[in-house]
Image 1: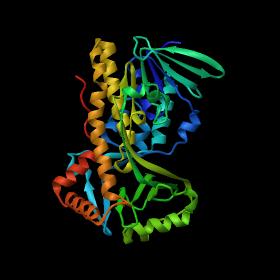
Image 2: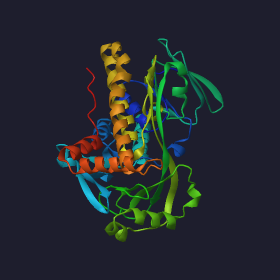
Image 3: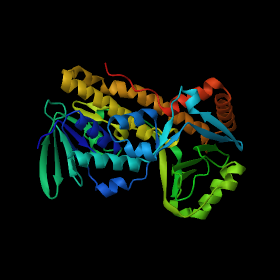
Image 4: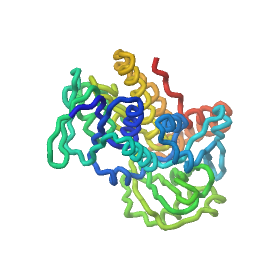
Length: 394
């Protein structure tokens, strides 16, 4: 088997890269370890930066997003029982974010790939990259009981934090940066109307809370809990009761509760590997970096990686600009580290840290108060939240 770009992973980053390359006439083949139903069953992010929205439009997969997605021109910070509005549109010269679930993005990309006749092999087992430092890398894998060899020009590792792509790089060739947080997010999905028309990020002495949504009738809520907490310890009633405590009273009074349709706890970590490439293997998304979800940057960072690699490969195939390949990691990491900083900052400002002393708590409160009471501070928050611009590939 042969293709031009072999993509490992059929999550949104792999599918988006495949869609953009296919539209440009560059052949791709995607290998996915799980089934299509499993991939669609993942409950993930739902806030899309302006840059990702524009990229999905460029990829020709925005019809349903533009029809059903919720454009948000701002969000709320709940502090000391009061709401502070961060007006994204006014503070960034007209930019906004789109609330549209990652599951829906994935579904749209799957449908587009199927309609184009491009190949995705689900349930591909034992995927292993080879010859990454050569001019002709290849992958071996098993599918439906047979073993295959897939020759290609380049390999895109879009297979997540636990995937095989990063593991194929010798450990001595990577530098790992990591911070693990002493808490997680307990999240539930419920078919109830959102408590507020905008997202609400709440700081409370008992811990952080987030009110989000997937549609006008489906809500997504989160609570900060200890990292060792068990989801079994949280009945729906206990969750709703705790959420009400952490919200300003006027929001708690209008909160509509109901049975959860999904409930899980996600640990929080910051993680980056450098470089994001090894020979002809390029790491994208969670394969290269993880952010705590507080800044809504995980899926969006993957999209900016996709944009960077897509535009480099366009110039490689159309103009012979192979020297750009060596710039992929450098370009991506500049934006990655800025997003890591913002996600770390939002997490540090809004969560309760069990080991924090009184001085640290007062410093955090003072810093957050400065930012939200300063036009320059609110502008900094807004610029980072809507997403920093993608770097041009010259």
